[in-house]
Length: 244
Ligand SMILES: [Ca+2]
Image 1 (cartoon, protein in one colour):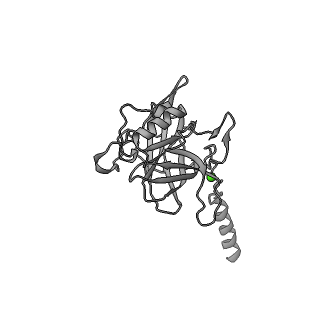
Image 2 (image 1 turned 90 degrees about the horizontal axis):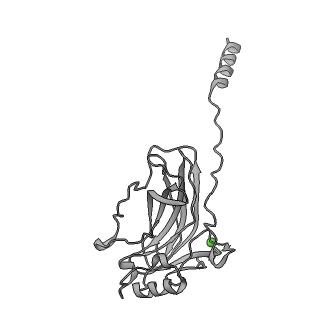
Image 3 (image 1 turned 30 degrees about the horizontal axis):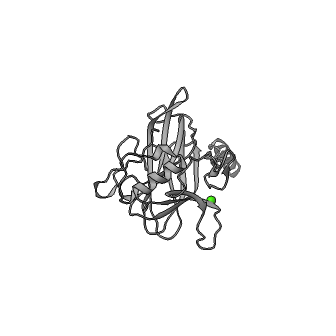
């Protein structure tokens, strides 16, 4: 009886599904820690857009709690619209130059942004976005995961998910999962870092994008439509979008 039970038990175990450990997800976002310079333009980080250098800066991360983070992205939304447009014009970063800038802080209108270079999106995969954010005085930020379809060499934005972030005086880690190909023909992504209100200095570091085989039933924190973000204070409109 005992032997029969053991044989039965062994047979039962043999039929159980083999549970394999999920391989560690691979980060597909280049230079999300901002530590590598662009070989073609050492004034900016590799695999990220050029920046004006005053409102949006690539510089040494602040030394908080004794850690060494290397370089990070610093954004100062206390800069006036006019100062920011002047700075972008001097740096030749023309996609952020807008008409009729005013003297008020850019925190109150456009905010400040920085795009990653495009990366690949595969059908049916989910994407986990992670990043570190620190605001010195409580300035809020957002990180967009934007999806594009390709028409020749042109990218058309057809999807976006967004993560809100905030902190005051300390680095905080944020994570979200998005399903860009669920309803749309997305083949490329770009990450957009953004800070706005209230006016002040914020930092981004350690941005990663990891494809996941397991697709959660829905996006965890995304707005898969093209609607305006709802968290803009005082009915202000975020006018942060360049052509793509
Ligand atoms: Ca870094």
